[in-house]
Length: 223
Image (cartoon, rainbow, N blue to C red):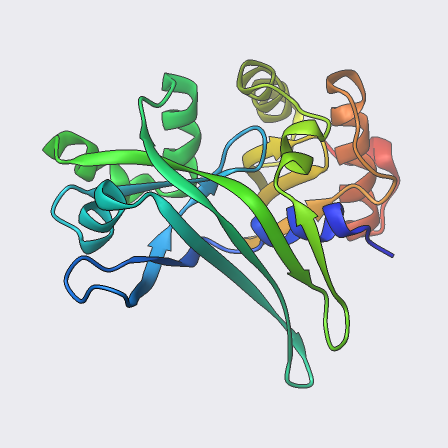
């Protein structure tokens, strides 16, 4: 059974976009919500790229407090979901973070060339996780910062090692201490480490074990 933190991280890595709600400057006193593509940084904090002309940009400039919601269908009419409340501020993204974003959203390269788009980071203050009916609980946003982390530099190194040894059928977009975001046989999926978070040194062996379980072959047969 997933812990509340693991459920949160799993949902943050479950899809390419989220619903962002900001305080409207067009109609004061009302929230404005729309879908935004995003990725997570090394601490699982959502990162999104938006134009200076967007409603969200104007709203956040006036009031950076916002809410972000990510949902995942569970079947039988139920959804697992997380609602994050916090602050979204523009950032000067590290080049490795930009590279990570483009692995998930390669089409965004043209937006970066326009010069009007800026990266924003969502810093959660509190998070409501809902794992299904009657399974709701609150978490402090600081839990993400306190969680085990693999740095962006280590991510680049591990990705390079994986590409040298792995089958072309498994391509990685991003990695973290809890698992990997991958494309396997042309399908996007989250590979979660069942035994919990791992260090950089244990990361590749853990991935190979999970891939072996997925393909029902021995770990040393996964290359």
